[in-house]
Image 1: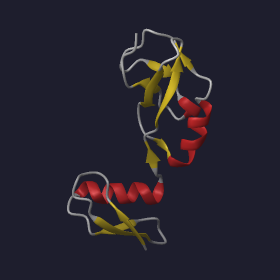
Image 2: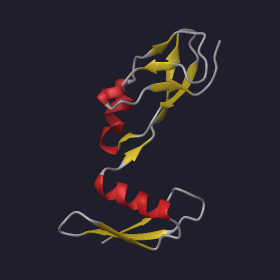
Image 3: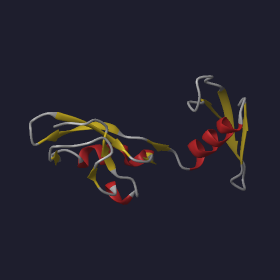
Image 4: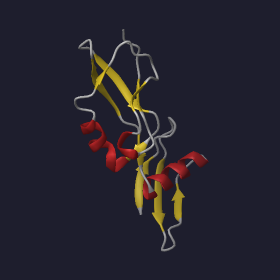
Length: 115
């Protein structure tokens, strides 16, 4: 059994989750269906949104993030792969800075306008 705090909404429910021998996840403690889905994802395929910065060609730091969550075990590798990336200004929110980071299907996009 795994105990976790749900981060889907501000309630922060304390969830208890376990996987049976058939791979079915049983969740208790959630006050809404989103909590059950969150716990199931955490036990079977945890994902996270990466937020970081990259340099621009004007020597300003550009905040960026993944366009969709990526596997949790790829976060450090994805962040490391962005070292040395330089975005060309002008940049607008949502502009793709790196396409399909590490083959995850998620792009690295600008989180702010610059230039």
